[in-house]
Image 1 (cartoon, rainbow, N blue to C red):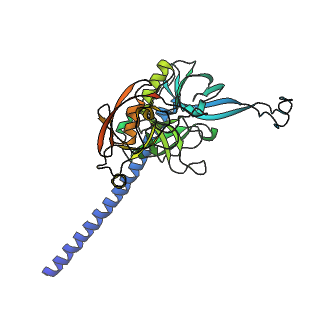
Image 2 (image 1 turned 90 degrees about the vertical axis):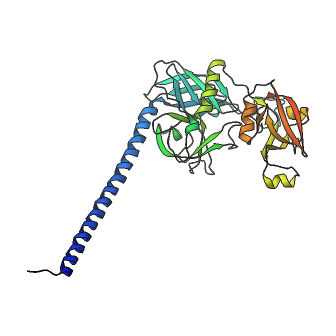
Image 3 (image 1 turned 90 degrees about the horizontal axis):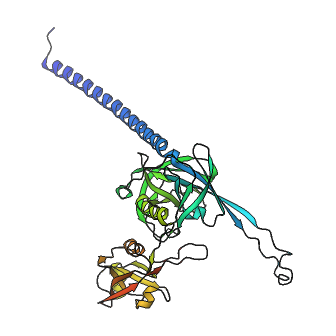
Length: 373
């Protein structure tokens, strides 16, 4: 039977349509398969990170003695012990990370501060007494020593290489439930003024961090230690999607000094500063936005004695430009008490040079460093 050109054209169009539909179906199925494979690979990466770093994460129990109150007050002068309440023991739980096979463990200072007894529970079930080898309230870090050898130790990573959006895994012991793994991303970097320590340059993550996670590990998908979990931002006391970790590069530096000497001395200038925005610069009659504005100086502190005033703008420290509060804080805290720093300060359009001997960073009654640089 003869076929017209129109019939051949129709049949060709039908074959082409079938081919296009088939190819689209194949690609859809392939895409779904790829998405499923990607999810499986990510899950396996989390599992591998937990297997790698998990054995190095420990549970910490710190026992403190809470002194009883003196009594009613009315007869205390004559009967000081009659109505006195008894002393009581208080136990807090936290986490830690083994950083050396010989038994060094890093945790947060606030987990063990003031403790009369500290015990560490290992991932293999052993429970050991721990000695606080050194602590640094300014960065909220402490190092413990336990009597064991050949322990699984975490591998440090370079926290400066972390990227926003990168997957991380938090490992710790929230609420005393035992080792728990949560996953999230790096939400932000270089967070300051989160109310925990004076100097820490925090990693922010949405990986679930709850009470008891303090001192635990924040690791990348290779199981390498990128941070020490420290704090949560929460109105309820529980997880609300914002947690903070001390970067591994800072933790490595501080823990190394704690192991060597048992303490870390930080320089203190005695000021509180804020960024100099364009609007603020206009309001106070200062040209340019370079430097940090002094909004408060501690009475009789180093800056006060040197003649630095509120309203001054600190532009550089020993020739290094001050680009942020974080930068200024590090330039000062990296120096030792008694060291002198040369500050270039702008005041009402003129620049002045100050040689300022630094003091030691003071702490409040609870042992926490007071705010300021």
